[in-house]
Image 1 (cartoon, rainbow, N blue to C red):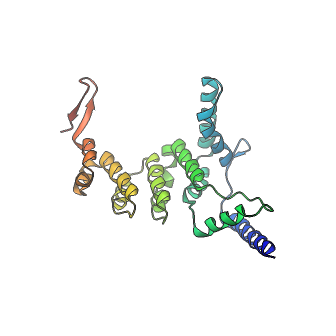
Image 2 (tube, rainbow, N blue to C red):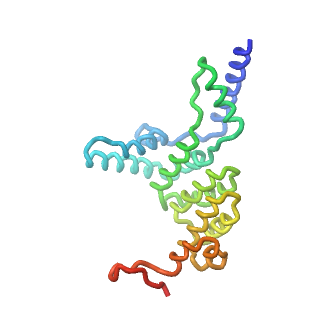
Length: 226
């Protein structure tokens, strides 16, 4: 009896999930009859590619061409991948799925989804600048893993000073230390004067090198910037 009750709950949750996906989640764009996810699934395989260097490079270029071919159409799906996070409901559902063998339903892999978003925005780069405001808004996510990945994805788009500076300054006040440290590091690189005003170098003395020195290729030494 308990098993049938468990199956009923799982079936109901899956059906509700399918309804949500159908109604709320935009359809993925395609390039040469393959979906965005299918192209992104190919990209990590390059690291373990066993063919020739030429074949590997050709595969990389093919994946990059596909993403760039999709352009702005890929942005909504990439944002959805970035927003994926573990919630108590997802964790509970995953536990239920592991304790039964009647239904097989793939639950989103949060780390993998974020990695796909990372790859996508890295490839699109400045071609995804229209996504910068939405990426800045993702920093409001309650999940610190989403926030930290949102910073990097935002940097790939090379947003305006007016958009990036407030995001990094707000990141200094984040509840998670690794988000604060990342924000401080990027602030010292992109806005060294503002970093000093915000007290970044007092909190993270090791970052001061970004403001005070630069590498001189002729002398092979770090020299003062001013």
